[in-house]
Image 1: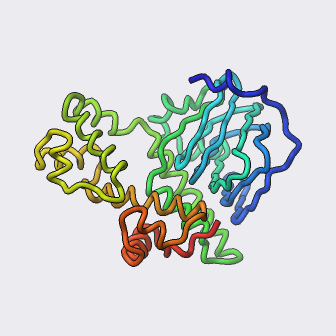
Image 2 (image 1 turned 45 degrees about the vertical axis):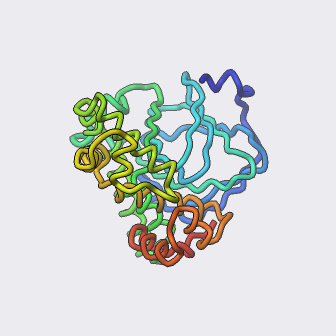
Length: 299
C-alpha cells in the first residue's frame, strides 16, 4: 500500500509536541534520550537528519516517517529503527494525536562509528549502505535484549558522574545489540533450511499461540492443529524461533503485559487475566524477565 497517496503534503510544523524527556545524555560523539511523546494533533514535524547513525526504539503505538527520495513508512512498535545518514538532509515524522508514545534513541557520529567500529561493521555495508549518500532506514522487531536495556535506562539508579558513566555504557550496549541484530542474520539461513511444509506449519503454530494467548492449547493439541507430530514441532520450533513453544508463549504474554502497562489503561490484575496469568504469577515472571515489578511502570 502506498501511504503517500493517502496523506497530505509534508510541511514543517511549528506546533511543538508535548515531550516528557525523562533521561538525556550526550558526550559529543554519542547521545541517549529516553522518554515519551504526545501530540494534540497529527501534524508533520520536519527536522535535520543526524549525521551518522540514529537508533530509535519505539516501544508502543506508531508513527509515520518520511526520508528524502523514499516513500512514507509506517513504523509500528514495538520495533527498532536504524537511520544512517551522511551530510545535510531532512526527515519528517508524524505522531498519532492523543497517544502516548514511549521511545529511546541513541545517536553515534559518523566518525565515531566508522573509525572505531569499521571491522565489525563490514558485514553491515550491504544493509546500511554505509558509503552511500542517500539516507537509509532499517526497521526490525524489538528484541528482548534491547527492550530490557531500555527499561534499565528509564530506571537509571545513579546520579551525577556515576549516572553519566552508567548511561554512556548503556548507550553503547544498546548500539552494539542493535548493530548485531540488523546484520544479515542466521534467520535467513533458517528460513532457507526450513522452507516447505514444515516451515509453514511452525509459523502456523506461532500464529495460534498469538491468537490463543489467554487460553493456549496444550503441546499435543497444537501439534494436531498444525498437522505435525509433537516431537517435530518441539525441535523445529526451537530451531526457527530460538525458544521452546511455551518459552515463546511466555515471551508473548510478558511483552503484551509490558505494552498494556506502558499504555496505562488497565491495572495489573486486569492485564494478568487478559494474558492468562494470575496477578501473582505475572508479578513473578515480569520481575524475572524485565528486572522490575509491573507496578513500577508508569506512563
